[in-house]
Image (cartoon, rainbow, N blue to C red):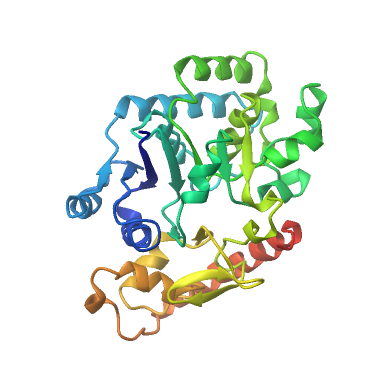
Length: 346
């Protein structure tokens, strides 16, 4: 019998989000499904304490795997044409450890689903695992609709290679915040082959120049170049399976603490709190009235196992926090407007 489970990536900085995610998995997926937390870094005191209280949740401890993925990603990023350019703006997560999520391919589960920690599970994963009987990867996102200049891959350069047309590339573009796959797809030999293609044959240029440091962009190259089969629920022939998933972008309806796509009341796999910081969720969990869309839903799952600790009322933030929040809200609004430009109707 195949072993199925869930991975996420976390450290103490996202403790409140991790607890909420684990509770939502317990409530809406299964209380028995095994979950493995891949360490983002070594700041894990609170995480380990939490995991000790959850018999079905473990900490990923294959540090050889983690270091291999770290080395691979850093070598590829260093080979990118933009890596040596001066004054190239790099985001705050540049040089971070998001690529550690790929250690899931070296992990314990034959079939697995990965959730980013800034997510809440909203429904069973049965349909996702079933798709893995037909496909190598399963996604549920709208990355394939992004404008060409901000797509994960440089479509014109990939087309120029003669290997793929844009019509073939587009439906294979995907996110990395939620995906399902199988153990062993990227073994050591595969990684070495990809490294040679990227560095020696200069296919690193396939990775979009604006986000060459992103683990998602590298992930897109890996799945495309290995010719793995992909299924994306947002491209499903069944309109009931095409939904939104992003807080602050998509509209949902809450029915008994479970969110449904507002258009058609279609069940969603997860809500992704993209563009909110871990500090926002820490402050919210402490009772501060932070501007987070669907914050009541987050608080429900954050304190699902200890409802008596849930803040009874939310108090306004202090002046500095409020100004910082306003700035973040402005930036998020700009990102949302941009996102809606390429997102299709469901």
